[in-house]
Amino acid sequence: MWPRVRWCGEPGTRLPLKALAQPRPREQLPVAACQRLHPPHLRFQLLTACPQHRDSAPCPFHSYDMVHYGHSNQLRQARAMGDYLIVGVHTDEEISKHKGPPVFTQEERYKMVRAIKWVDEVVPAAPYVTTLETLDKYSCDFCVHGDDITLTVDGRDTYEEVKQAGRYRECRRTQGVSTTDLVGRMLLVTKAHHSCEEMSSEYREYADSFGRCPGGRNPWTGVSQFLQTSQKIIQFASGKEPQPGETVIYVAGAFDLFHIGHVDFLEKVHGLAERPYVIAGLHFDQEVNHYKGKNYPIMNLHERTLSVLACRYVSEVVIGAPYSVTAELLDHFKVDLVCHGKTEIVPDKDGSDPYQEPKRRGIFCQIDSGNDLTTDLIVQRIIKNRLEYEARNQKKEAKELAFLEARRRQEVHPERESDCDF
Image 1 (cartoon, rainbow, N blue to C red):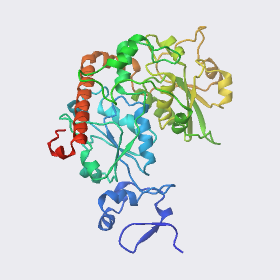
Image 2 (image 1 turned 120 degrees about the vertical axis):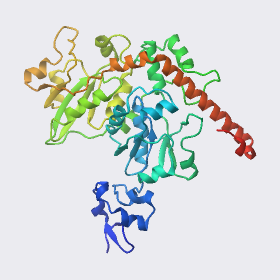
Image 3 (image 1 turned 90 degrees about the vertical axis):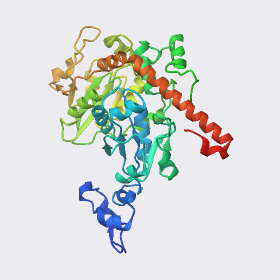
Image 4 (image 1 turned 45 degrees about the vertical axis):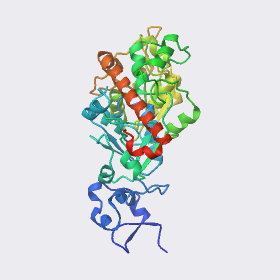
């Protein structure tokens, strides 16, 4: 009796599933043989196996500016729809043309997306308008996007073509986070987003008006409150404990506005051992505010937890870790190595060195990530371009409202579909 197989190559030829269990690099795949038997967009489907026996390669396209846990949650949902996730990321030029100036450079955004643990492959310089030709070029079965809309500079749905062809799927947008919200927190210098803080009247006013165009408000733009749940943490967590032979490495910090500087540091830490198990300790909001000042952290503890859990270099997160790395913490997690970057180590409230215990044990190591980007520098970028970002939000919302109104008119008068200008 034949073992479980998937068809590949010439008619009459079949390979055992176990022979396909380890996907080979694209350049080694027998593309020509598959093209003769199946359409190009199914090529990767045939040559990728997974435990769930899913047969699809989803492909979301996005700007991924200021990558946050909302983006990560979208990619998590997209990955669950298939067995190989290819993510297209737009260039700075494309984003500026259709949306406004990006906060991060395209190279920074490419690397940030690659660091998200549900991503298998990144396509740089992905076109802003997703076409069937693009999906076929990268062997994608369908395209995935959130349940909001993205429009071109002239107000057209960027996914119109793939929707009409039935190669489009949606995932649920993560409530309580948006680039608009994060930018506003920086500009207002408010602490309303911190855990255990009351939302001030100023922040409520901002939540109702930031980036609002004269025409009103649409369902996707604006600010809403993020509500953490145990289910969300479970979805993001790996659920794996350290195994025998793994090196347990502990790092601690705010990890605020999780960015490429953090990714470079964690990648270096991850590379210190052959089998690393990296635990990230996240400080409470009030602790971070004590040593960072101003309105830091920009993201509260619950938001920072999801951002760090989404990183492929992190195995576990300690939510509300003590500022000083204690003997109890090191013994509890059986830590082999404690790492810190080249940023300043601020003494604890009693003036002591927070890394005194790991230094005494000889397991402390400072890591130079080679990246000088900090949360402070990101905030400076935003403040420097405040007017541009506010104009971007207003422009984006005006386009979305026009699109919604046109769609409403079309639903009321379907016979006038051809007259509707999107």
